[in-house]
Length: 379
Image 1 (cartoon, rainbow, N blue to C red):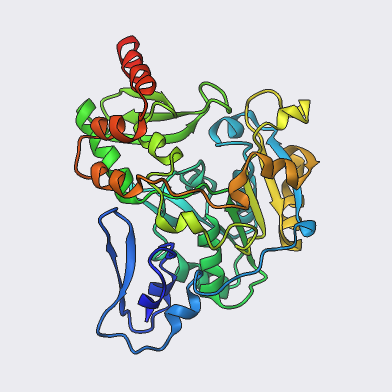
Image 2 (image 1 turned 90 degrees about the vertical axis):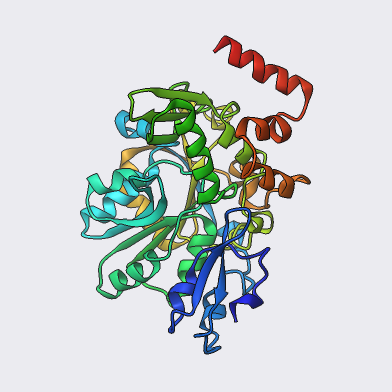
């Protein structure tokens, strides 16, 4: 029955797989590296997959007048430096853990595969910190969240808007002990896209990647870089506009098809809070002009407000307008546009040398290609 959902809309959340009573749904990758559900012969057409699917039912956006917005910067320099923006997630998550709860979020394993995992200690929380620009696998997390909620423990679940919406659909009812926080989301590449990039780097430098930070602040928050640490000791720090993987991401060429018509943006995820970068906040408030990072946090519910109040004293905090946050984060309300050469890029990305693909699709103009070659010479 799940095939009734348009492939162009499917966000790959795996809620259908988790809800199926007969384990009759399998996910298979398409040529672009994204996974999509297919029903096996074990399907009994019970309809549970369609019931939990977050894109199968239209959701009305929250009234904007109900949303409060804050600019936040963590007072602890160490936490701020390790965070992508203002260090909000760490404090929210730490509060849940300190009160006997469990935090779920995206983390890489030793093979750089990204999935949603549970954290019950501050040490386990660290891999969940920081932005990861690819889609995480939620297949085991949904059931684990439900079991934890039923046991009565507090749960904080973080993810993209579609992942939060999927969790709510899967659970089927509200839980007072559940807090959800989504991120301001541009879109998500697949694990396969990232694996292709990892293979390229490891072949080029003859060493495995030990860790990756997509939001390193060596050059400041506004000019963040990608930092790679290799097992041979080499450290690579690249501007995001020079990094092959991020160039494709920023040009929307590596995103999932559903990202071009997101069913969970425009305040439809059902999250308690939304967090992300508060770009250009320094134009309005001198308080956040130090280029160390500032988070924009949106409060969608009373529960979200209470959770923020519990940790608010750990931040420099100012109330701001929703309009200002949206002005530099258009994806809060609108989906990104699908590039005309999206399909051609996908084919090239998985078959050609990545440098050649970069020249063909990411450095389209002569000027861009010249800049790239000059940068390589001067590097």
